[in-house]
Image 1 (cartoon, protein in one colour):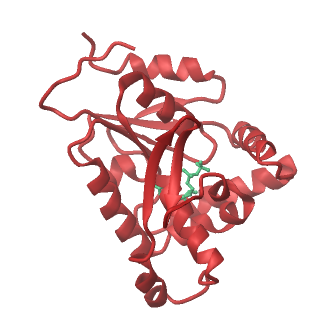
Image 2 (tube, helix red, strand yellow):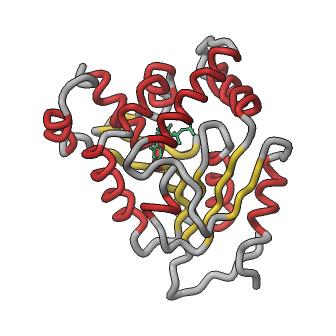
Length: 228
Ligand code: CDP
């Protein structure tokens, strides 16, 4: 992938969109191609959800939850298997993709204190970095000055089919109908919450991946990069 890298200017790419649109697959490949840092903002909300679930805090007040946030240390590392997510020194990369987390992550990430803290951490991680960050509010709230903003979408059906494949790899069984319901519920919560909802930044480029392969999406993005 041809791309003009400036020594002084940190190029930043945001990829937002609904569940199963292919954001993380594209973001990972793009960072590998470009040698950028990958920040998976969804993994941070998933890590918080896992922590609250395991500590039985999901239904506690915002005040109690807020007091726990400083105990939640989230780090990203790269190893031979790819990107791993560490929560308080434990590798939770697999656990955060499970159905238990899928079910409550949107409710958790709609909480004001949690959002404020995660957005603060995400801005800090991206500061002075060549970065690709994916999520729901990255182009609108976290990195509003990013050079390239992509809004990646796909039909609910195709997104459910993709998610079913991911879950089968984790040996979790769920019907396609149930998954479509779950994805639509998550889309609704994510798009209707008051604080930084899932929405397309006014200057984002929309790519509908319903009928596109991964390499076709990558090709479209590569055409948007400043070239040598
Ligand atoms: O991979 P998938 O699109 O299913 O989800 P994800 O990117 O891992 O994000 C999981 C959930 O975290 C989303 O459904 C949102 O509720 C929340 N999220 C968010 O609120 N803001 C972000 N920047 C990223 C994720």
